[in-house]
Length: 216
Image (cartoon, rainbow, N blue to C red; front, side, top):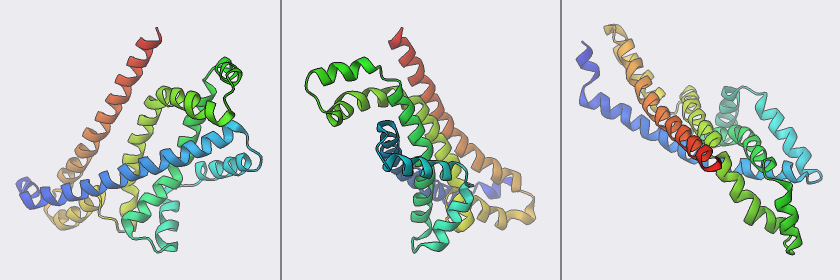
């Protein structure tokens, strides 16, 4: 019966997996923003050697399957399942995030640099106090879109034994496979992902509209 799936124990079981999904997503977002900012700034400043290495790293990550990276990090490092998922997600998404950051930096008018330099500010000071704050304000919408991708892609880590939302859902599917309730379980898992990602997407759209209103 469908009601069997909605037993309190099963709901709590899924919510515990959802908690792990949020944990993976939260820390992956933090680390990918930090890594992406570093890579984006390096490429923007065209620092010798470092900029080239950053470009190579970004090209590699953008042309590898994410699941392959999940498997490599899980089975070639001593990290436990959740930590390996966070590490793989952060390493992979930092490459995409760096292009978002670099795009925001390139959107800042050159006149602001010239005005800051004329006041005696160093390149680092201009970047820290003028350029980065403005660029981050401009790239919040695309960054939030990347956050939804992180949440969705976190489902890949169940393949290496991580009991996040999808992993817990698969366990319930194994438990109820003989009762013909697979669709109900899939629907429950999908609904949880949808609500979370729709909320993030709505926030991104709201922020984008707010920015357009501010500009005009």
